[in-house]
Length: 382
Image (cartoon, rainbow, N blue to C red):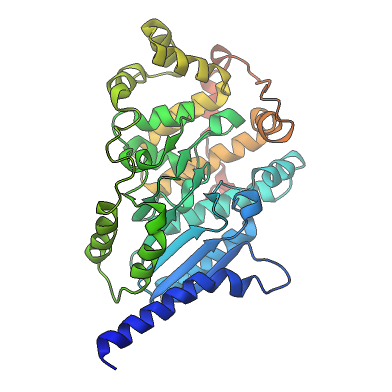
């Protein structure tokens, strides 16, 4: 048998192993929330809580973080592929309900979850010897920290991206203060304040994903990626570019916000949230009126925190942004709006949160500044 045939056979076996990961791991009595497997020269992470849209909990974080470190120190691991099981979501964010319940009673999870999640986000952003490839086949909402800090991020026509944290009294965390200000113009601020949803190819056009590949081609893409031997970044880019070039779904459609980009830059260029709202109301266009109405439903405190967060994050490193965001997370745990937002949106689902303060004018600059204050010995440290 020729070397070429042997290599092809090995790659095929590796790919079949990749497809059998879930089946092998599900044989245990307790289904693990995350599946970790070595396939050829690739480490494969599968987020495996499909019944709750693959929401991330502390146990999963504590599995992923040391495994990434182990693979980075392993000379035989070149890439890491992370993906979601179940066909509905890559990751719908952190386990918000559990964090909420802990926060209400002063439980340690409200501290430990954010601390360890942010440490993991930073580790993903600082990977040196591993090429991190996120396959975002479906929903990517609120918990983008597992994807956006990696070098390669693949969206499909089924991908849905949003950061709707201001609707639940939170802010776009997990490094949102780092990557959002680095999107084109004021797009990141617009997405952060409004929670606007991007779908399919638009996730890549916005810069949230690096590549777009049709979902039906993902198994073949994974097969080719796990078969790479000692690849460079250029090698991986060539594979991803090749699959992107083969993907024609929605290629003729313009970016959903294309005709509004100049308006977004103009209307969202203000030193305050009040200024943005004034711009929107004065403009009077259908688009501006819709955004003004959207902002009127969001937590006023969250809007002001988010605006300041993105302003500061534009000039900070990812690590410094995460330190800042940890302070903000703990401020939200001490406050009112996060618990009320979760109640209204996720628990009772009446969609009628009673924010306190209830207006932007009632949220003082002093109260916002306090959210950014150092926690002293309790600050996040790496």
